Amino acid sequence: MTNQIHHCKDCVDLLGDYIEGTLPQERAKELEDHLSLCPPCITFVRTYRATRKICRHALEKDMPDELVNSLSAFLAKHVPGFSCSKSDTASGPQAPAADAGPKKV
Image 1: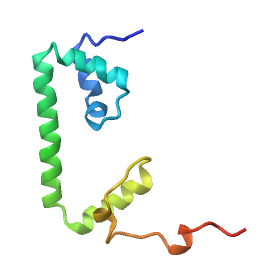
Image 2 (image 1 turned 60 degrees about the vertical axis):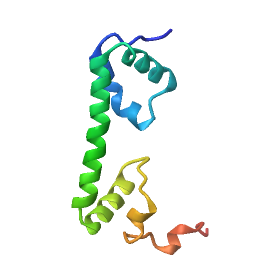
Image 3 (image 1 turned 135 degrees about the vertical axis):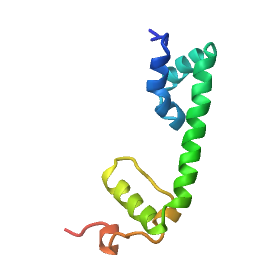
Image 4 (image 1 turned 90 degrees about the vertical axis):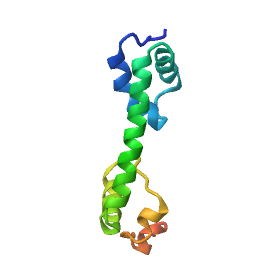
């Protein structure tokens, strides 16, 4: 049974997952159906995407490399599923080589 989206607030609650591509396909379809009929929500989605892009761009330019590396390492360690690009971790903390291979018993 499909849970239709009838209220714009429901769209806002789903946007983060939708933009990231992690919203289940059926739910994403329901959101897209609502968006096809709701110009204010379409505008909101466009603004949301643009804001995220602008913020990421601004943070990339304003954060010192040391802070980016430290933050990326912290998030990778403490946030399940967080991944960062190789350039973010290239000069950041590395795990000791002994931890990289299989453990001897």
